[in-house]
Length: 421
Ligand SMILES: Cc1ncc(COP(=O)(O)O)c(C=O)c1O
Image (cartoon, rainbow, N blue to C red):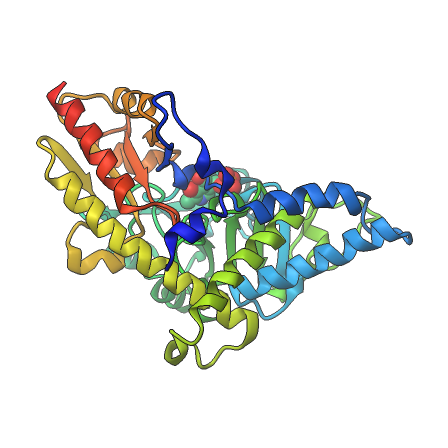
């Protein structure tokens, strides 16, 4: 991967801090920067398409066909069998609340929902609230320290003949741990339950394939994978068609439209189209490098998967360097998978503590030097409490495709300076 060439496409990376040095964006799990093509697509939408969808004049027609094209692109990104299984919404949280509200209406009091303690609250609280309204039982699955990997025994124990829904994240937005989602899907299905995957933090780092995962629903959010603020829900067509939804009467009662309440954010959907085209371009540059793994795919779907494999390989190497650097800093502790041989079990999102230093102070001091990280619980409230860091959370350093080894070294020098005071 030519990271320098790729960085040139992200105008935000040209920003400089007070000391004149380029800003280092390690706040990626909270939101990534976007390539120029995405900025252009949003602007271009307003210049040449701005209208509501469904009209008979040119700008409205262009809006409708743009949305259809982006649905098809997103279907390729997720390897969805049908474009009509792609639902756009404001963000993952809103879509998950809608999904939980809907599914819960089909359940009986005493039915059970299985969740995990490593999830973002956006994949916990919607289910807890729906459960409270419908008399459902929530079971929480634990994870195992220090690698913060899901405890599959705890999952097995949580599944009963009353389990109707299993909802887990693909990977943790804090410790970065990746869940064995194919295995979880088959465990959930064997118990007679539907499986919902939160892929918000995997979409930027790993190839996604809803057919291979064999899940029933999957949610993600474009601003985490180099796009604008728009959420995506994928669901099996028959479920999207049959589940109860809150919709206004004149709106089409067919998937995906029956799930898309009100007028969509067309400009961000246009931007998402440019994001997928950008990733497709990375795949094109890969040529047939990953051909043996991708022989069963073709066209854009193949290129998108190829791009995600390339990005994931690059990020894994950088993550290895990041963790090795962090572990040399006295008093610094990294949670999650750190064994260089096991980095396939994590994405490059790393949480840490530094003895004697408050996470918010570290965040502030790094920010003054133009190094942007995050401090707190990033809504992974259950995980932070479970690890005993509910009060102040931890510092999170999250890598993305445009980060470099020089940036990792700059972070190392800045943390060294903090340790030495
Ligand atoms: C794992 C995970 N799930 C869900 C969300 C919520 O996504 P959104 O901001 O699109 O509602 C986030 C946001 O950080 C997340 O990291």
